[in-house]
Each structure stands twice: as C-alpha cells, then as structure tokens.
Image (cartoon, rainbow, N blue to C red; front, side, top):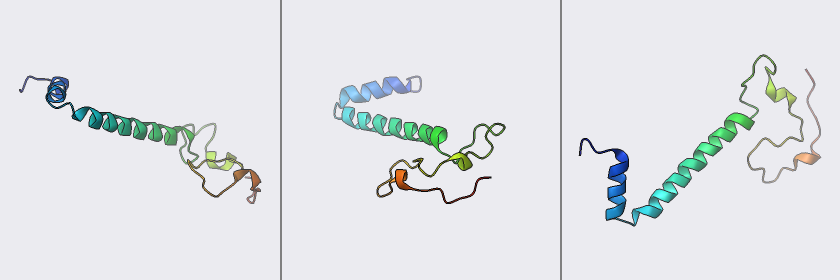
Length: 87
C-alpha cells in the first residue's frame, strides 16, 4: 500500500462503500465554497490593497452607497449620505 496513490485508495474505498459518495460531494462543495469566498474577499474587499502605487488607500474611495459587506440585513446603502471628509 506504500506505492498506491491517494486517488487509487480513494477510488477503492468508494467502490467498497458507496455511501461515501454524498459525503465526498458535500466536502468538495464546502471546500469549493470556502475557496470562492476567500477569492471574493481578496478581490472585492476594501481592506485589501493589491496596488499600492496607484491606489494606496482604497477604503477612502468608497462612497457611502457602496455595499462592501457580503450580506447587509437591515442597511439600505442607497439612502446613506456622506458624513466624512475628503482627503
């Protein structure tokens, strides 16, 4: 079993116990969802700065009507007014 690859062992386990198929599907779905959420955080969050030369402070360019949270339950961002100074 030392020379057997991980994929071969996994296929053999699934053939012997087909009840593992839904569990593996949900595990893959959860891992994919977590990876996509991390990618969204890295690309769309105002806290992350990828380009320091052209945009050193990306959080200052947000208008009050921009929704940057993933889920806003009770906040209507379109009705907010700007209450901070421009720098």
